[in-house]
Image (tube, rainbow, N blue to C red):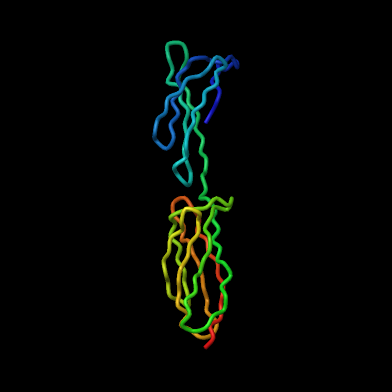
Length: 168
């Protein structure tokens, strides 16, 4: 977060204390010789964020502040489900896939709900964003599989569906 503090004539005010308030929390910084100030800030809130830069005033200059808002969106995600081979009844198959940010960065320790023929099973991703679920095929015919991440305070939900066939 950065800005410039100047007199109304455009002359920079150096070494002035600027209080930056982000969502009610105050941070202190100073202007440099050109009136510039900066604050490194890691965003922790999804949604609308409020920010105010304030100079409290002194014996020479009046107080002044400027407020802005910025919006932080949840990060998009992708759940994949690897191709599922057709199988015979009572065989155990392993359903696998990945969970990543839309940029391809794997997301570890995330809960993935795998739904097979309307029955939910829960699994977690490993350090590489990979999940796996062993399933004994018990329904002859077409089987429907959906893998879902339900979203959280940081990441959007994602889902993918596939089918496989079980024969006698």
